[in-house]
Image 1 (cartoon, rainbow, N blue to C red):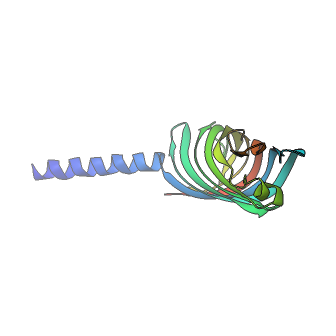
Image 2: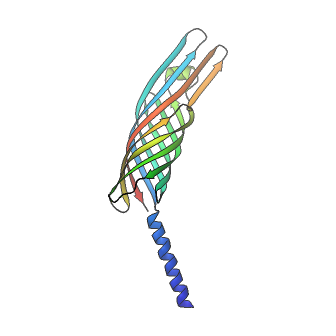
Image 3: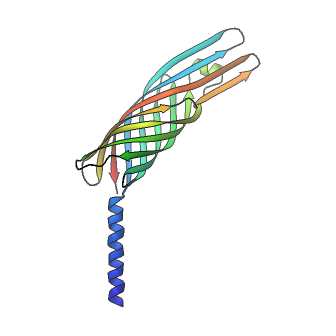
Length: 195
């Protein structure tokens, strides 16, 4: 009886170890660039302003997730570096479908969703009190993962996000102002450690 218990425990340990190896957790980081298109519109009751522009900035991201047989799920925290008096923080979830093959390079496509909180320090945004846009972005991503070793992956990718729900507005009598995100394009290099 004792031997059966030891053998059963050993088999359970081996099967859980092999399950852990085939479905590892990972922690990773990204560094990249982003192009964010946005629109301002407002009036002080006399003059009207309509402005569309793009912020070209860099960002860093920390990811934690889990690999599965055909994909991976992860959560991320993203910090967009201040550029043109605009900065932001985001938190989100992503899923990537991995096209497994016999090489060390794995292509992927996926979806991503983020909640973003921005800080706009331009005079226009401050004067109209629309300097804290926030909201959800969502979109698609694609890239390549290169397995350096069993535990280390490098990746490159691109992401297109619809940011039209990231906004801020204010109305006061005849004066009103609105900040509205349009879309964001990210391109990045990343590294992941699997455990």
